[in-house]
Amino acid sequence: MTTLGCCRELLNGKEGDNFGCAGYCVPPMYRDGLAAAMEKMCESRRRRIRMGKSGQARTKAYYRHERMISEYRKLYREVEEAYGRDWI
Image (cartoon, rainbow, N blue to C red):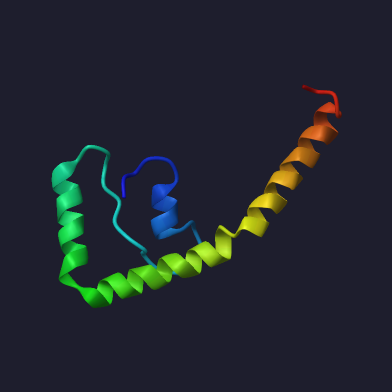
């Protein structure tokens, strides 16, 4: 995965996240780095399984649909309190 957006956070987590590494980040357009990361993944089934479980656990904990909706509602309430309903 490339280092664009929140990819690193998805793979490595934030501070205090103990789920473990879920993949490798490489800079965009860095073919050699991407190839090396893919080779590492191909070399070890155990690593793929471990990283997959880490990614699944992180996703369940932080990226659930319900949580996203809740966070957006919270944001909308904050904007409404700060600017009123007719701020658009």
